[in-house]
Length: 245
Image (cartoon, rainbow, N blue to C red; front, side, top):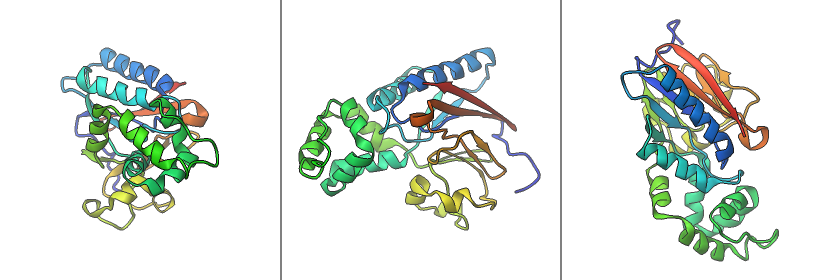
């Protein structure tokens, strides 16, 4: 990386890490960001980037999406929602019944409950996959389907690239594969390469935010730690905000 500090080019950006159904942490975190903006206003509407993984693990996936949609419609931010691997998995479940048992066993039970879909008993995931798929398709409100369809893979602001998981080292940013942007872990995390931008990401939980030269990781594992993290980037300034479920 160059010795020059990365900059947003003057735009204020707030980025929020993986939420995983935790409106109980998202609500106070958004309030803290709104209070920060009210106490330190800017002329240009700030950008609020959600880094993906709105669904699964936690109790209120449906409520998380509703909160993001409300912020889009009536909030002080320009909202961008990125596509995480859990959004990728949910979309696959809706169209590929063979993937259903794996999703239900590993992640999806809380999401099904959130949308009022009956959860199969342990061991019956495969037998009930077709029923679960049909019930979930019926339970998802149209605006939630639309939200899933329009989540984007990345957003660039100044010297920062916002993605869910990371990038493939040695591959130009314009040539990155969507699967890597949503799913990559250790090849990216262990790299000290200059990626061309400072990559702001979630996906892999850490005990504390990771502010490194080439990347900023802000997934602090809210589903087990209770802590949801955001970063504020403005010019060359970097500030962390956190809220607890």
